[in-house]
Length: 389
Image (tube, rainbow, N blue to C red; front, side):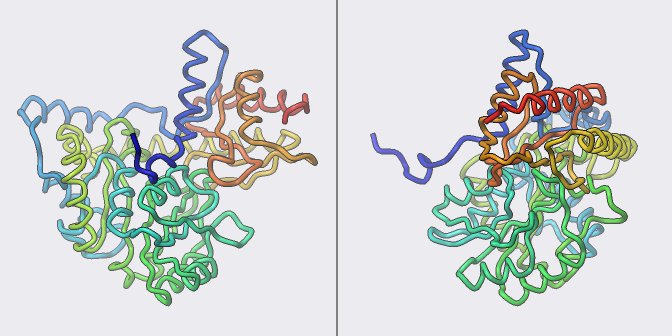
């Protein structure tokens, strides 16, 4: 049998692979600490759970409109209108099975075979695979920094790129574009006319002052060519509920909605009502508590890593990751390093090669203080051995 080439060439998700591998070893009795997870380690807020129970009790367990219940779409439009000082309507918003699904839908609605799409590097592992699946071509910044710049956008557009994915706070680095950088990116987007998918899933986990710098803050007039992707998973510890949102111009949403209608159809009805509760700000106390815990853990892990020889990193300003580079005078495979670190050092991490930047590892600080401290201790001991490859 012959299989579809675009699908056959896809690579697996390294984040899921290493997370599952660490969990399997731990379940088998191995002494393993895992800093692989890209999800909060807190319970879903009570308001969301109560809303789900109420929805089930009221029989709201059947199909919903494929683009999501109107109440949730309206709440999303209202909330992100407030965030970005826009005037989004129901027709601007769509609910999908997680932010990953939202990105996939919006890409499929925008990318033709052969289209060039600018991605950040380091990138979230699924970006290039999503573009490849559609027959598109991923292109990357040529600048040395870890964040996209306006000049990167201009160069990519000059070489034929039709769109880009913007991600700040960034997974895997936790780094955030400054407002000055974002203004230049917005100017480049306006100059070139490319479309933008802004992956904002970590927007509420920004440890700077005020709101995280955003393209629509820099230039509100870009509303028609910028799609916002967000959701409830990271902000409200609702990863397993699988609810994400896309907010964009009505035509883009309409086409993405047709794609969803012929693939997954509606997201889980019960999850939508749970998400509605938190989008309507019924869980703000828990949200703030989780935010404060992550900010404190960020400081803890960075203070501990500062004492570890052989690492170089920038303190993250968002998300719940830190992305150190292994400082060595010999070539290093981050994949081999992470496998050895897990099997011999009892610490699960994600290799930088999965994110397009060799020589780095991603550590998640969505873990307890004790696990963070022990994890850094194990990393230090492993590095002291110096026999890694």
